[in-house]
Length: 220
Picture 1 (spheres, rainbow, N blue to C red):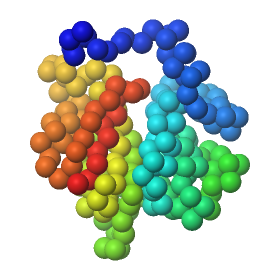
Picture 2: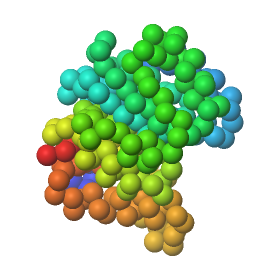
Picture 3: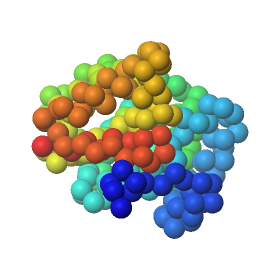
Picture 4: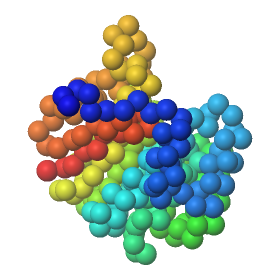
């Protein structure tokens, strides 16, 4: 079979099978997802359950103790990461929306991980740039305003330890990245970062078609 044929287009039954055969959440995660769904269309900003499970697995696999997240929303991704961190692990969460992150705070408390998490309600670029020069991260996740993705990439990469991982969400952008007619700000920003990373000699990277596309970057 040629490499170009070695992919599947997921049907709903096949996707359901994928979810059923992974560790994709428990009661708290399901309740958080359900509460988020009640927010309406904006709930589409929540990551998929298999994405959360993947992130938790990677955090554990590299033995991460320090992590940063840019873009919290209602907390599904931060909960996935915080649970995977050790008892003395620390997660810095950056967001600007107090209403959505108030939901996240409740679920962090319920899950017993709030002590691991510091939430900064301010523009993430400002928060990252204000960090002490000695700050380092083992793991990072970016899922925020797309126009600033390159800024977040650079600010995190300089603080990421060698062999640390940076995950970037929405890199396929519902397929719009390959539509040359789409010159909207968000699409252009994602497309530009994708093109940059593939040439960035400071890292190894792989783009995987999980959810809306994730790029996993390893700092050399």
